[in-house]
Image (cartoon, rainbow, N blue to C red; front, side, top):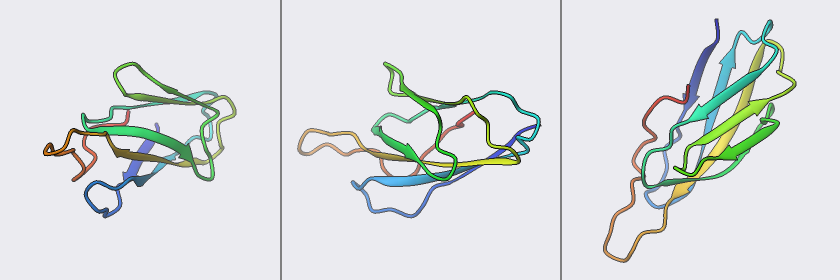
Length: 103
């Protein structure tokens, strides 16, 4: 059974931030995919980290799919960076917290 956790750092409103993700118990896993459900107001920038995904696909609705062909054994640790979407002057962008499940 896979166990996943993510850490959203403290960040300043309006600035990009990087989220750390760890997926434990990948020893017997032969393929791995994660879907990130991004809230309105945030846009995906990049993925990286120790076990960066082999493939990253941004869906038309802004959600993101990460996939690994060669699954790291034991655990997979990666990061993704998001930024507030551009908004018109006088409007506010959602940047307080990243909400929702990534799995």
